[in-house]
Amino acid sequence: MFEDVSVIGAGRAGTAIAARLRERGVSVREDGELRLLCVPDRAIAEVAAGIQPGPWVAHVSGATPLAALAPHRRRFSVHPLQTLVRGRGPEQLDGAWAGVTAEDGDAHARALWLAETLGLRPFELADDRRVVYHAGAAIASNFLVTLYRVASGLVAEAGAPPEALVPLMSRTIENGFELTGPIARGDWETVERHREVLRGTDFEGLYETLLEATRA
Image 1 (cartoon, helix red, strand yellow):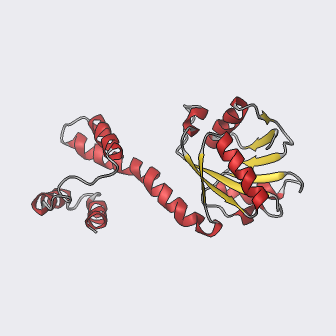
Image 2 (cartoon, rainbow, N blue to C red):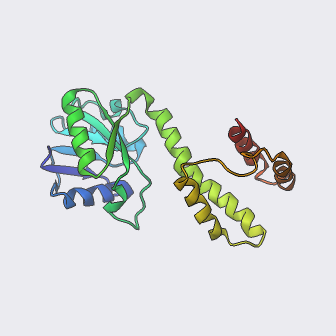
Image 3 (cartoon, rainbow, N blue to C red):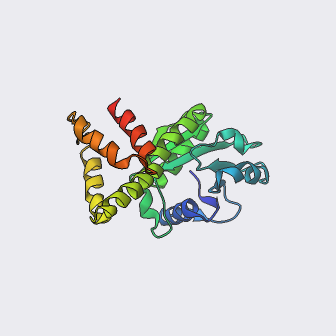
C-alpha cells in the first residue's frame, strides 16, 4: 500500500514502528508517501500543519481526533493498544490490538494495511469516542503500575518480597480477570480489617474507592 513511510518522532512508539516497517520491507525515509506522526499528543497539530499538503498523514495517538491533522484531508489514525518501552524492539507490537480511525474507504484501507503491517489486530475506533477509549486504556495500563507500587509497598512493610505479587497479578490476567478474594466470597470481616489497618494512611482513600467499584 505504501512503499515508503516517514516516521516522524523517535520516541518509544516511533522507534518500534520504524523498526517493524523496515523488517517488513517498507522503506523508512524522509518525504515518504505516508508521514506517520509518532510525536506527543500536544505536538500533533503543529507538526501536521508544518507538512505541505500532498502526502498521506496519520498519527498513532489514542486520544487525539483526526481534526488535529488539519489541513490534510488524506489522513487516518492507527493507535497501537500496547505499552511500549525503549529496552525492547518491534516484537512489542506482535499480537497487540490497534484502534483504526478513518473518514473514507481509501483511508480505511490504508489504515488497515498499516496496522496489519505492524503486526497489530485492527478494530474500528469512532473519532468521537477516542477520549473515553483512551481513558479505559490508561486505567488498564498506567494504573496497573500504580496498583503494583502501592501493593508492593504494603507487602514490603509486612516483610514479604514485593516480587511475589507478580505471579499473582499475571495469573489474575490468565484467569480472565475472574474475581477471587474476600469481596468475591462476601468476607466483609476481612475487608473491614483491611480498612482498619489502612485508616489514616495515604492509601485509605484509594482502598475505599476500589472497594466500592469492585463491590458494584
